[in-house]
Length: 490
Image 1 (cartoon, rainbow, N blue to C red):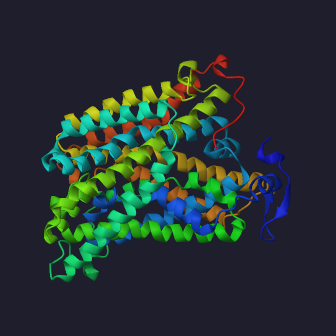
Image 2 (image 1 turned 90 degrees about the vertical axis):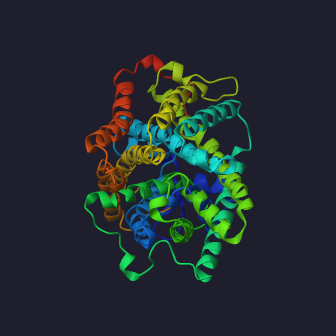
Image 3 (image 1 turned 135 degrees about the horizontal axis):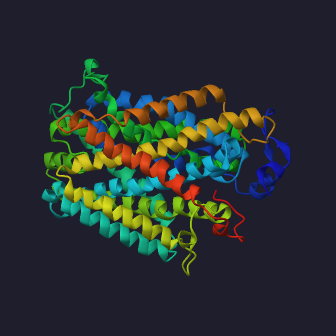
């Protein structure tokens, strides 16, 4: 039964109604708005992006707040309305709001971004492990490529066996690999300054805004859009709140506060300790820990923190590994978007063929780390491509939300986003601007060829994000549909 078939007979706040079936299914499974805020924080916040913004010093506060206002807030509230009215996730929202082909494009982009997400995530894992084994390895492309390939294929093996309990590992990662190391880093950073040491980055009012050196000086902000992405997946929990109309905004604002604190404070602590010119985009977190522990004579703690960070990253990787590909599989089996070979399941019911093909591409990308002399450059390029592909999905989501509000104004929704059209307009404009800016080389690539950078990013983002799904859709066959597939991904 589709969402449109469910009667709206349970008022929520006098202006909206929530599907009755939802109430019957979840009236004993309510979650608090604080718990939802914690769930959102655990899936969004990470220390991995801190070195990227630490190079800006105090200006990182502005560079985190701006995308939070123009991107994080609109995606949170808009996806909440969509999730409270239409089950089936991004495919259902876009296919009903625009068209089924665009729905396939949206769910494809949600999956395709992970192809570049894993190399960038595992590049961080490689540099972190280097500080546990031998810090000199952090700048080795061969070491980074080897870790990416070995760890990814190990993850495929684990996922293909249908292993349980991976989600628990990822949930514990918020505390083990984010909160504890983050609090330690910030606390010791404050003590570092309190002992009379001078901050590596100036902390005066003149440094609140980033120095303007042309468009390239602001390109790093694009990476922050990816840092805030994923809110559309957490929005599915809006129906588990007793009073979504009031509680969901409170939950999102609390989550925003916690996410901003986790992003901003460690970035500032790193900027206090590590000079910007010495900062590695992949190893910056461990550089900061190593430097501050050395100040207190506690360098023996550096490997321990490294293991904590790696554990959190691997838990997150395993959770993401099967999730988006599972959603793509279910949609493709229902609509026939992928050839039967990619729809095949192994004996554990896992989409192993999709994971293997994805792994082959990830291996090729991982080898680029061994070929590109500067590991930080490779890390940044793959992060930008990841962001570009994901932003295509958000552009479609904002258009679909406006269309659904206009075409189906009386459709039951558990939550209605305030000023939805304006919020979608802001979110769409911000996403489009970030996508376009991503094609401009940032200042640290000034010595390279802008054309080469454009071709790499454009080929990766537009080729994988648009051309590949077009080919699948163009050459699809009626025989690709699986008759027994009647459900879609949630």
